[in-house]
Image (cartoon, rainbow, N blue to C red; front, side, top):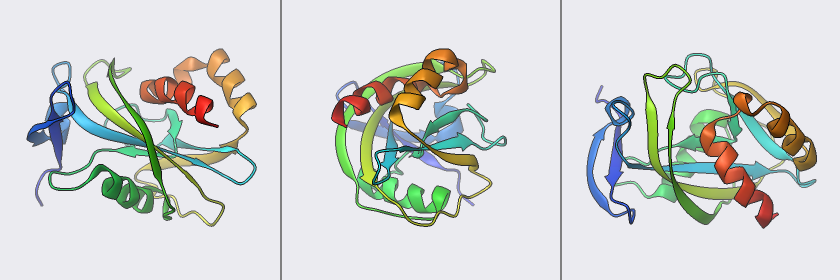
Length: 172
């Protein structure tokens, strides 16, 4: 089986090549394209995912519904839909809102993120089938409760979620 590849990008998010996924997260991280999907229910609650304990970095932390990387030759939106199904067992219409660049070092210090993260949102209220290899737990949380929790326990959340959630809150 071939190793998973990510799309390397320049500061303007123009594709400049590809690299094996784990290698792109070593030595301070190599800039690559990523996405984060935020899902809400009809009441405006946010779907959170706790990353599975076996994830290669940021394991066990809470984050948005789904996040990953498009593959070479795959659009970012297509990748977002693919990963929603792979991680949570459902799909729904998505809208892309913004992107941002960030860098973060994993709590273990051995891996790092350097990504241009494209943020999508969607509304969903049906059944989920979380993949235990990807997802440790899921929960719905009201935005006000989430804001308090993130302020009191920031170490429980992924760095990209903390950055993107501020802007997503403004969209709601």
